Length: 357
Image (cartoon, rainbow, N blue to C red; front, top):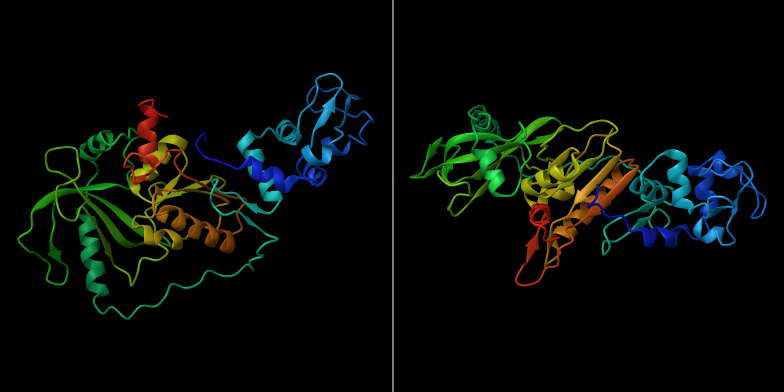
């Protein structure tokens, strides 16, 4: 994925004096057959049987030279042997070195720095009992039962926001929904009514709440109301929950973003399954399936670094609690200047389409 960033310079620092071990593990017999700096061996690049040898600075750069085709560095050797692209090679080398790779500016974690013991997921904190939960759950289930497939309004709204991918079936529509209501009295309070986009929060496969976004009844824009988004819960708290926009696939990576539009933009960029946290405070606690082995975290960029802090907290917990082959974070390559206080991945995608990146 072209927008995901791995810090090659940091990997190079960690790989210094370790290329023999790296290539022995990731290139196998193709490396082991090149014995000694000047003794010729098989070349993985051109197929010669006695042309390849280690560069004099091999321990620092992993370069395998060839008298015919000139050879390549350690990354190129691994790419050639395994058929991986460069991003995959960076991730594999980083994994071998015991690194957590993040966007430049985010902290990097190495197993040698903090060997976190593998532990079971901590249970969600127990809040005071909510005696209204059964009624609240029934009320929220009734709201979800009222939703319909998109009749074109969500698609039109997304296009206005710069998103052109098909509306996922996990985003549903209610044509009229009140802005003020009370679940315990099951009534509206002199509220205006608007179309809303509705998405489920899921926790271990069960609905734990709803995310609601109010739309303008006529124009493809958010409604001009005081509260444009609402989060409704039918559990004690939403810790661990997420808006699972696309179904995860074993052996495929998962992208986690803060908001729904940012997640949809990442879907358009990458075509991999994406989830959204919704409110930023839920991002750190998101649970993922045990079969997921690669996670990307799409960071919202803002002046107070709140997006970066939430992404880093999530990354630290995933690093601690799951056996991942790859864990990476990335934020939009847009400077916060000229009054711009925050950008997300939808902002990045729109600018790219407009030729401003």
